[in-house]
Length: 137
Length: 231
Image (cartoon, rainbow over all chains, first blue to last red):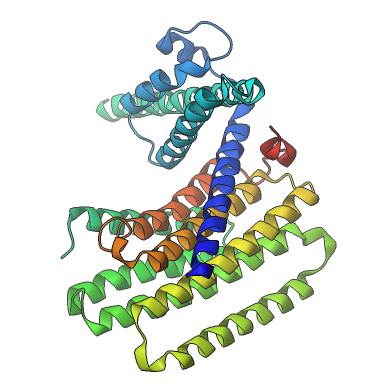
């Protein structure tokens, strides 16, 4: 029982660390992706960077687009990470401002990731539409 | 009796595992990630085997149970080889493939010996409790191995995004599985309610994350690992 308890505690700690690093690696690989003007048109957000609070709206728009099938898991993983950051940010805001600032930065990265996913899905929808038109002709 | 959700998780798992194998073949990476490919192929076949055994003999039959536990052991051995392959990729430039192969062989023999010792002690009552304990230990060794590998990635300032994501996804899988096994060991009563759903869902995580990595992240993509662990 004792060994099981120790393994459980270590595994949960390792799981949280691996999960956070994995999500950050996904966000980092999207950080340098330049967004097209279409995303700004669709979302109505004109500023260069997306804010931390835009994540929910961007994910809603992503869900409206036809699925590509290969990004669903990552969107869900980043969504869970965003939720964890929300909780951590709320807890840290009154007590540890440095962590609150870090969570805010991470949430902005989550929004950028969602914008990249939206951009890819818009391109995919356009390709589908073009293909359908070409097939009809 | 299984419900629609069980069948859904089953089919999604199978499709994702097959997708990873196809994706590797299309990108001509089958031999670059040979053990990983073999593991995904075996996982897809095992998922198919579970379905066939379940339909032929039933959920509570001895055939299904034996197939389930033996295939699980086979998959654990294959996933150990996958971890070793990832070690080889990380230490590629240090020319230590021979040492890694030796370490892999020793680890495999040690794991087999440990399993044999436990089976010998429990041969009169090969209960599900024993199987849970064994699974918990084997997966925990996986967590430790992946943690060490991640330490090496940070130390060597590895920058290959694809490799980093493969290792981290494996770490999530190992730690979540080991944690679930340990929880089952601590609270056997939870098995029928909450924990019944966890292993199949974790099982879909690994092919899902790897499918994303192989289809979205190119072999040339680079990433600074220091940024991942820094606050």
